Every structure is written in structure tokens, then in C-alpha cells.
Image (cartoon, rainbow, N blue to C red; front, side):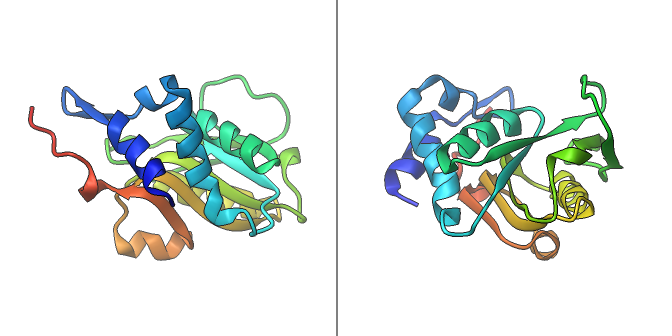
Length: 178
């Protein structure tokens, strides 16, 4: 990862009322380009055939990463959005806010030939990523790993997810001074 990628993320990161905010990255085309390239560069020679992203920022980053790699995008929706067709559905364990989400993936979107990379903004508990991995593998596809903006995973969860690469670790972010 280049210093410009890491710098673009850190320049646009901020805390708002105690909540991490990465939305400003999406407003700056140059920063977004650097960040998306940084997410996929380590996987350019990994024979990735699809990028999946979990609703909502995972849709934006994952879609952009898929275009950057020249592969398709596979949405992983949360419970309530419209999503036609036969689906694999799984409940993720509670996240950092103690919420449990039901995730859905269209069964026909992946096959045994696919090698899938998850792209998202932040990984803390890894519960949603692990659920996405299980659904990808249930489709007969291979899991390549996760690429995220910010990594806050504990080591015990990292082993279950395989390769997890990030642009920064949570402890490298500016400290909230609210």
C-alpha cells in the first residue's frame, strides 16, 4: 500500500459525536481512487472473480473495487431490502453495537469456479464477514479473504476469516477528543 493511499484515508477520517466517519472519502474523487486501489492492489494476482460487499458502505467500496479489478460485484443484503430470487440467508452474531443482522446473498450469483474477496469499510468483530464467508462457501465458491479500510479485529477472529488486509488499524486512527 502506498503512503498516498493511507494518507488519503487518514486525511478524510473524522469523528462525529463519537462515531467514526469515513463518508468524506467518497466525496473526494482522488482520495476514493487511492483508497479503492489500495483495497485491491494486494489481490491483483489472486485470481479473484468476484467482490462481495455487505450493505451499505460495502456496496459502495465493493462495487468500486470490482470495477477496479474488472470483476463482478456480489451484494450481501441485510434483512429488509428488496432482493429477488432464491437466496442463502444467515444470521450473523452480534456486532459491536450488539445488533444481530440477517444477511442474504442471491444463490445464483456465485458458483464453484468463483474466488471471492469481501471489501468493506471497517471490521471489528468479524461476525458479518464470517457469515458472508459461510454463505460464499455454501455456494461452492472459494473465499480469498477480506480487504477493509480499518481493521479492529481481535486475533482470535482473524484466524476464522483467513487473509484480512487493511489500509489502517483502528489504533492508528486519530483519537476522538469529544
